[in-house]
Image (cartoon, rainbow, N blue to C red; front, top):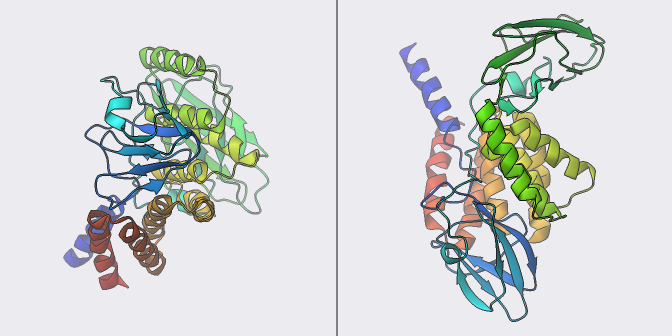
Length: 358
């Protein structure tokens, strides 16, 4: 019995240490490539050489960009300013994005070992899940259960206990009692075929405090003043939402890009990362797989390695250990190609652990 408890604890700890992002800089600020023209390359400190960048590539203060003559790049900095890079040759990110004000933040997408968002037979909460919200009348969405025609919904929290019945896997909260700032609320859904989330899915969401809501809306307005009508601008807004745990808003924004036909690996990778963070591993896996195909088309070696490592973490949480092992080994190949021996060693620890399990 004691041995089983130790094994389960190790399993959970392993899942929570998923490699999902590039190496962090000395702060948790997030900068990313917004637009490029011509040949633009990046070199991280642990790499052996320069590699091409793509829109959406995250950059650290310790990184360097290199442009050929006539090339240009735009970098969204953590303080929402834009660094226009036009000079040929090398440029240091630390010189271009100089600010002690961190607005866009890097978020760890490590997932927990849970079945709730991985079980297609129950109507688990999809949105808003593990998220802050800005509205007091959110749209509630859950997994559509095969064979179900009606759902009994209960939303509850401090001062609220609202129930309704609907025939679609979504509903807008319309209770008489308003959802209050700074309070957390839970949702249970029971399908007419008897399956329920009660005691199976403890997902919740929180109405953002009035002070934080005011600050975030001001930051959104600041970003939108840039008047940058491009996919890069949408990515900036998605990162801003995620930096403030507005995960549902970030997902809606990025899924809209998907509906419009986005072919950017950065869009799908960010979606996968957020789904993974909020414990929706099946959806994360779907988006990561598309991101990987797009990254391969882009010949983006680092993105491929990051996505493969993320898929390893997702498949581990889904108890697909052989698949997880295969993804981690594939990511190692990518990092070797970049000359990043530290990442290769990080992944080797996961590979060795999985080899003992399978």
